[in-house]
Image (tube, rainbow, N blue to C red; front, top):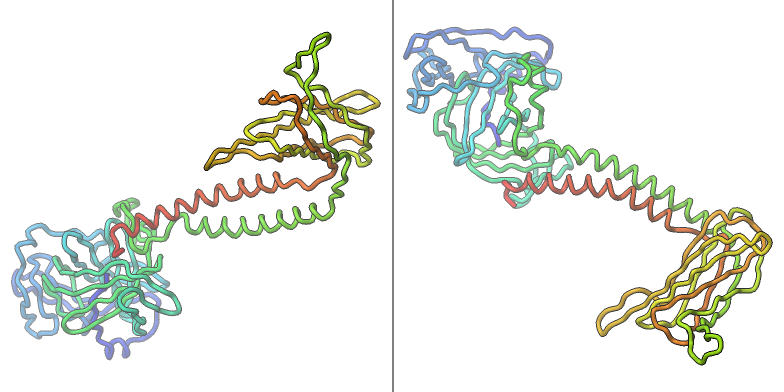
Length: 440
């Protein structure tokens, strides 16, 4: 969107730069068509004015107020501006009055534009489409266009959202150019939410405007409208800020800081742990031979390791096993038994490995952990089980005390990234919907 603007610069230069309350000079005259009284707000600047009664367009610069254009048949149904002409409100610290209203269309898509005026500042616009609003001003410093694909303005990149046409279908109030129904222009919109750059080209000129997204609730407050008098926005506006993007940026910063802190703690823990080897050795898992028989039992013999000492109190231990099994599994029902008290701490371990011509599953190595082990003298009592009832299986095991555990770090990583990814999906979905009606 862009708003046609032919501002009388000489008149504005003579105006004071005060931004406080203003009392614009009014000029009244009677419509040459219906006799209705018309009040000009931008005296000496407005070029055309539409009669609110009969909708003819009058030349405000002509001493006899010549009619420029008679009312169109489309004026049979009067448009009611959501913000009435004559309403005043303060935007960006300046007080503006609504002096003009127009409706324009691009094909079948209509939008509304409200001309705002402050005698000391000049003109601004309010743009409304599907309940979404933007505050618009003309740019004197022109952006730098890049083959109509993007534009640069104040070191910010704006991406082309849409290119189309704009045709005037309705006017009401006064304007600073000679407006007519069916006035036509070409428009290019570039976005960097909550901002939108618009380039509008007519047969006479080319202008740029900058739009800033503004909520209906703020406008209701600014122009002292009844609550919920403005329609509720629907769809997604080209320059509407993503409600999830700010949360994503904040969460991303928190996540990065938290992860770096946890990573440093994890690395510190990895450096300071003792990794004490308690037991290491090969074990042959053999089947039991039944008494008074040559037959072999389906059970493996119970394995008992030599005793070892755990010198550090309340530390973790890791049991690691390795076996060159193939399409088989081994389950070690292991107990860490205190040799003095006879109490056992379960530390079961399973190893499984399966492989086909083009696939594999499991591993020939696995480990398991147990935590808060009291210091003392222990041995391992292992009751093996296996899916392949061979007579014996060779197995290597290691028992290590006070090892670095990465599982907690992985859980923290998962818990931190899950909400971040969820919000990220929301941002992606919002942007996808935004660009659905865009140029890409």
